[in-house]
Length: 305
Ligand SMILES: Nc1ncnc2c1ncn2[C@@H]1O[C@H](COP(=O)(O)OP(=O)(O)OP(=O)(O)O)[C@@H](O)[C@H]1O
Image 1 (spheres, rainbow, N blue to C red):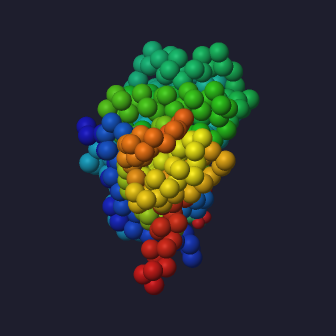
Image 2 (cartoon, helix red, strand yellow; image 1 turned 180 degrees about the vertical axis):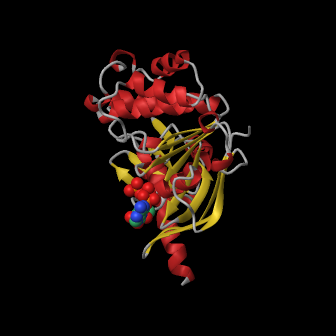
Image 3 (tube, helix red, strand yellow; image 1 turned 30 degrees about the horizontal axis):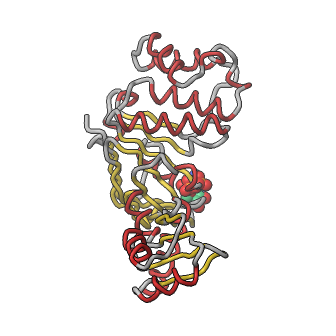
């Protein structure tokens, strides 16, 4: 089966609220795709429609080229984590997983494998009702992995995770993508996806604002700004300004240069015998890139109206 999720023109209203307003995107194999946007943007509703838990008013969603309801053994096609709180509290993690595995014709051995992968081992026989949210997330992920599916779809999996859990989750997501799976992960915090997502689908008010690779997004937001440390700030600013750079002093011995590459800055300073001790091309954080992107989206909309 293809490892893809395709969402095309989804529309969904709940009474007077428009949850989805033409949501369209594709999740490719071999990548972690971050699904980001503010609260209420329509991320959970999209995932619920993909899993056939909510019916769309219009549009369609496909997993590996087929609607979810046509998948005969769904756990073998898509693993999902939607609501980590939804557990039978009196059941242990192992029993919960055994019950799920049994319903899909999977052996108990597979349960032990997913318990090991998600680090649930020591707690697997305790009642799930006493689990922290982070442990529940791991249990939800263990369940999602049972059928070894080529597609994973996780709603806010970082919620409630401690720093160690966040590091574990990032590595886990990257590993699953490296294995060739399509991985869709929602979050309303961009910082959670730093060093994790390859691709981003940014949504707002039920539709896609941007669909871009993380590398492109960061490159666009980083611009060609270079920061420089020099004991001769005045001379550096004169030389770089004369060469067409937009130069600003940012400290007693630091300067920011726009409009020149770091290579050009080094060449100009060297040719003019201006001493410098540090030089760095600015790289925007994912958070900064996101702010820049959403600011542009707002301006674009304002410009259109
Ligand atoms: N069952 C429902 N009944 C009524 N309104 C709903 C229902 N489910 C979602 N909504 C509304 O639809 C909109 C989209 O909600 P959704 O949960 O999909 O957003 P989200 O991007 O997942 O947000 P969050 O980051 O808070 O999870 C919101 O305005 C929400 O209040």
